[in-house]
Length: 411
Ligand SMILES: *Cc1c(COP(=O)(O)O)cnc(C)c1O
Image (cartoon, rainbow, N blue to C red):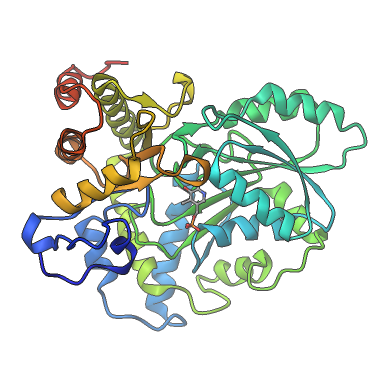
C-alpha cells in the first residue's frame, strides 16, 4: 500500500494510500468510458509506428474505411479525428451551421448541457428543451417546437443518444419521425459517444445527418479518436455553412481519405487499435454485441433493485444498455462509496456529474465485458455498500446471478 497515489484519485481518497494493482489484482475500470481495452487491441496499439504516407498505412486506412460504416449503420463517409469526442461535437456544428443559426437541443443531462454550451460559444443560438435528467428526449416536445418555428430559423436538432450522466437513452428513430411529422428541414445531429458499438444505432435508416462518436467507450479503444458519420444532406450543408473551421473541415479530410490518407498526421497506433476493435465487433456480430449489453444492463438493474437503491433513469423504455446511474439515499455520499471501493477493491466507478455530484454513482457495463466481469463489478459494489454504512439490502449479486441463469430470450 505504499505506491504513490495518482493525482486524480488522491483527493477522493482523503490522502489515504492508494492500492496498487499488484497488491489487489487487476484494476476494474467500470466507469462508462474509457472502458477496458481488450488484449488484441492492446497488442495492435503496441506495434511500431509506421509511415502515414506509405503503402502499408494506406492499406490499413482502406481496411478501416471499408468496415467502419457498418458500426454506424451507414454506407456514407465517416471521418476520423485525432481528438476526444468533444472535438467531433465541434466538427458536427462548424461544418454544417452559420453564425446565429438556431439549434434545437434537449438537455437530457450533463453531456447535452456541455454540447449546448459549446454551441453558444461558437455563436449559435440554442433553443433548449429542458428535462428532469431522469428521462430521454421527448419526440412530441421536439415536434411541437419545430411546428412553432414557422419561418424555419431552426437549422438543426441536436440530441445525445445515450446520456452518460443519467443512464437514459433517447429514441432517435422516434425523433426522426417527429421532425418529419413537423415537415421541418432541420438537420439531425446525434451524439452516440457512449452508445455506438453497444446499442442499436442506424445512421442511414434513421436519416441522421451527423453522428458523433468517440473511441474510448463501446469501441473499446483508449481515448484519442473521434468520428463524424456524414449524410449527403450534411455534406451539402457544409458547402454553404459559414462558421469558421480549419482543422475540423470535412472537405480536405474526405479528399485525402478517398486515397487512403489523411490531410495531417493521423493517430496511427490508435488506427491499428481501431482495426483490431473492428475485427472483434464485426467478428462477433453487432446484434450479438447489443444483446450482450442489454442483458448485462438488465442484470445490473436487478441487482440495484434488490439492494433497494433507486435508478436515476425513471422510464424503462429509456434505460441505457451501456451504463446504469444509481442514486444513493439522502444523506449518503456516492463519492465516499466510490473512494472506498477504489481503495479496498481496486475498482473505479463513474462519479455524478454537475447537479448529480455525490448523489449518484455510475456503473459502466460496456465494451469488453463478460458475465464474470459483471458479477465481479456488482460484487465490489455490494461489498462496498456493506462497508460504507449506506442503508441497503443484501442480495443484489444473487439477483443478478438468478437473472443471468435465465435462458436466452428472457426479455
Ligand atoms: C464521454 C462523452 C462525451 C465526451 O467525450 P470526450 O471524449 O470526453 O470529449 C460526450 N458525450 C457523451 C454522451 C459522452 O458519453
